[in-house]
Amino acid sequence: MSRAPARGGRFAHRLIQWQRAHGRHDLPWQNTRDPYRVWLSEVMLQQTQVSTVLGYYGRFLERFPDVGSLAAASEDEVLALWSGLGYYSRARNLHRCAKTVVEEHHGRFPDSSEALVKLPGIGESTAAAIAAFCFGERVSILDGNVRRVITRWLAFEDDLSKPAAMRALWAEAQALLPGSPKAEDMMAYTQGLMDLGATVCTRNKPLCGKCPLSSDCLGLAGGDPARFPVRTRKLKRQQVRWYLLVRLATFDDARDVRVWLEKRPAKGIWASLQSVPVFEDLEALEAHVQALGEPGDEREVWPPFTHVLTHRDLYLMPHVLRLRSLPTLEGAGQWVALSALETVGLPAPIRGILQRLPEAPGQGQDLAT
Ligand code: SF4
Image (cartoon, rainbow, N blue to C red; front, side):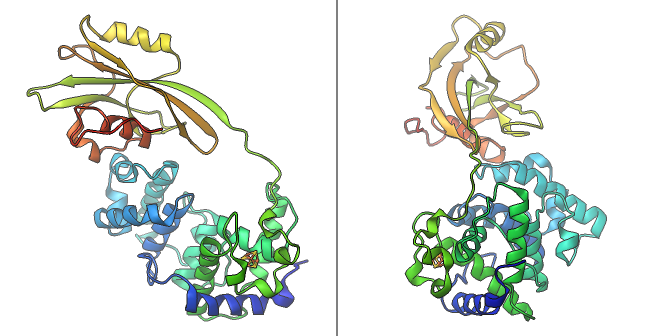
């Protein structure tokens, strides 16, 4: 049985009032009922800060103003625009979802969370956000920020690494919804949960003195609200060591320097992105260089650096090889001009390396970790 319903009405009322007076109102994905725009922002905001998403969101909409233009693009083009946002499966799913909306729903997003969640890459919380914002559906979101607010307010002790606890929390979140809301109340309520989690009920030091829910927050009453949400299973981190072969060749004129890029496999780290060739050990890289290179090619080994992914630490060791003459032997890949890298979907650390080459346009800084 829910622990919340007796207080649910007051919870929702206070949250709606607070959002109208103190919440965020000027983000570019607000004040719209266009499911395409809401969906795009929701996907971009998963695991990414608002400040980072702001630039990407505008650029993406400029190139793909609606779901039809996104569906008609190539995956490479979508990945190129996504480049630097990370978690690239989001971009691939975004593209798949756009195609499904066009092919199976005549280019219109379905108007209920139940139907939305069946689309590729749309989870329950994203479906709920689209349905609440665009169609006024009475349904609760439950992304990371919202889980934090609700588990703290309820002092929800169950371990969220267990699916049963997540289901129970979802039921609590549903019980907290406003009674029979108008569409604009559902929008303010949903936005209020997001805003409170992002700006007041923050991860490490919640600003309880500014919170509209503090008078009956059980987490605060217990003295240590930041211990919620409870999650006992720790992610096991893996260490991965990769040797990167940055092959450079100068084409017709000295300013036309190109780098050899290959498309990554469709699954795994950096799936479907373009990258310089990756080797798991130095021997394999050396054998490749022997097969492709010529005596006299110039070789530089850069200091290794770490790139942190969600479950892994990547130790990256770039080897830069400047070819003395244009190569005759090629594999499955392409020579891409350093001046044209903006149009290519590259993982952030690879882009960082290429931007730091002395040959790169506007070249310059030290290799940062
Ligand atoms: S009172 Fe503090 S812990 Fe409770 S919901 Fe508000 S900010 Fe979060």
